[in-house]
Image (cartoon, rainbow, N blue to C red):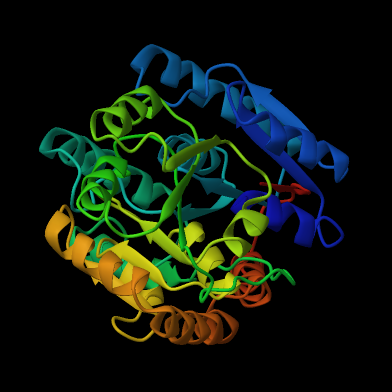
Length: 358
C-alpha cells in the first residue's frame, strides 16, 4: 500500500516503472497497471535468501535499469533494497532505499541479525540516501554503522484519510488486529490474553493471511475462543472494518512504523500495541492508547480489560489518536518529504538517463 500511494501521487510528475518479483501481490501489479505505470516482473526477485537466484536477480535488476535508463531508483524491502542499490551503483545511477524496519532490529534471531547487518552495510555504501520510517530505525542504522548520518533521513509513514470513523463507545466492543500471520506478528499473545477475559463481552476480528494462519486458528480452538474470533483473511476494505471496531491491537515481535496503527488512529480508535520499533512514535502511552513490552501477556490482558470495561476511555484515547494522525501521519506530509528527497538527489550532477524506477 505504501508503494501504491507513491505511484498514485507521482505518476503525473515523473515517468514511473514498477519492478517486482513474480510472486508479488496481484493487487499491487493490477493497481499499478490501472494507473498506467509500466510494470516489470522479475523471475529471480524472490523473498527468501537464495544465493544462486539472488545472483541472477541482481543481473535482472541491472538489465532492467540499463534498458529503462532512469535518473533514480527507489527500492523497498530488504531484498529489493540490496539488489536495487548494488545494481544502480554498478551503472552509475542514484538510488534511495526506504527501510520499512530493519532485518537486524530487536526481536529477530541472532543469525538473521548478523547476516542482515553484513548485507545492509554493503548496500549502505552503495546507495545514496536512506529514508527511515521511524526515528528508532534511524538510530539503529547509525548505531550499527549501516549508513553515515548525512545519508539518512526520517520520513514517518503516512496513510490517506477516509471519511469512515469508528464509534469506540459501542458495546459489546469489537477488537481488531490487522497483520500478516508470520513470525513478525504475535497473534498467539493476543489470543492468550483474551482467553483470560472470557467473562467480559468482546469479539475479535483478525485481518490478514500468511503461513502461520492454521497454527493460530488451531490455538483459538484449543483456547475455546473459536466462537468469538473471526479470521477475515486478506481484505482491501480495512478502513470499513476499523470503522466497525472499538479497540485496535497490534501484538508484534518487531516493527518499523506499522501502517495498521496509523490507520487505526485515523479511524479514531484507541490502540494497544507492542512497544517495538517506532510504534511509540505514533502511540503515546496513556494519551492515544497503551504500549506493552514485547511478549508481556499480563500487561496486555490488563490494558485490554481496562478498555473493554470503560467506553469513555476508549472514546478519549481514540479522539487523541485521530488528532495525532492529522498532525503527523497524513499521506500528504509523507509524499512531500519523499518528493523532496528525490529533488535533493536529482539536484546534484546526474547521469544522462531518463525516467524514474519505483
